[in-house]
Image (cartoon, rainbow, N blue to C red):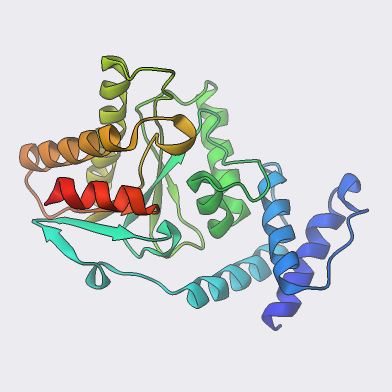
Length: 257
């Protein structure tokens, strides 16, 4: 199958598996079809999919991944001992684990084509990531606490694992509790990565954006927590601070010297 044929197949499958979606008209343009596919994946509940669908989905997403380009540590400017700074799409990073800023339901973002990192990671990984998260949450039977971390497979991402953590949501002034919980997010991810003997981890800007943690304060906490953890736990784990916005890049660049 060509990539165009895969895209059409996936759209026909997803619109056909739900009666409420069967009236959706599949657009003719590739860009509109890609947006519709992401939207359908975003709203799809965590349920099994046919093997043929998963095979085509994986082929499609891996072709998309190759087209975007994969970034390894060797492609990133070295900042200082074991720490890197990179601006770009975290779903392109070939590291042992990337960190997802999840919500307490930990099922990914259900808002079609939303701009959050949770949406981007689930969209690039494929529908199996939501299903694995759902199984974890069914066993846990309570919402995911703030400051903890869970690990899943990465599926069609170029990394090996995804670490999911729920950051604090700031309402008004940043409190000491907010700062401690954000630090807990970074420490929990690092500890879980060490437990799985991972050698490289890429952090997004946890709790900024939708969760309203001030960017500079969040960056200071991130750098301090990672630096302290690496000093307390000497080893060869390499850490990437991944940013997307220009303002975050400037903040991290200045703080990291």
